[in-house]
Image (tube, rainbow, N blue to C red; front, side):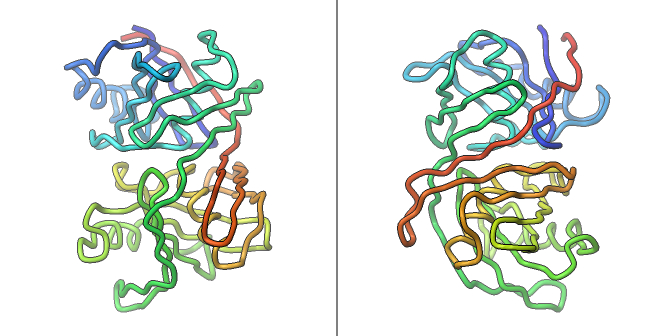
Length: 263
């Protein structure tokens, strides 16, 4: 079987280039072998392409630690890019555990529809390591806690992100933790501690979108939003909203195939 390692703005994934009729029983060994050290440059997750009804294909996403997740924004962009190479036409309809979402591929640039936000909580507060932080929260396919910080370049994302991610009182299912700064009303600088990877990643698509939406609700950002991630690349988040309600959310950025291999 052929597989690809693909980068979505620095977020890297292994994708097996095969439309499975069902999830294979060997998936645990695939995750271990492809994402955790037996190939160059460990990946953040593994994506399987499944046959499905009601959409062009389905995405089954596993975090690097082997846990299945409902959604991955950059992973979906990478899968859409590979699907276009396999002959699927725009818009490509991909079923995730969160929703059926559309994708548009234009060369190496991929735009995807995001699920609509749920469980929004604004102006919350959490105590971490002797300090108190304001945070905002939403579920955008997967949970995200967003915290604005002063010096994003030197902030201890790994250590504080891990403590917050594992705080069962505030986040019983765990959470991704997004630390950000706001240079202006159309730009975010973002660093993310990802649940399932259990560390900081070079980019996070759902984190970029969730943080942009939360800050839009707080009156600090307007669509479209440029999000500079850890890799230095720029993701674009656009949306339509009326008051606290969003009707459309899109994530766009570059995709790059890093290498191909065979199992």
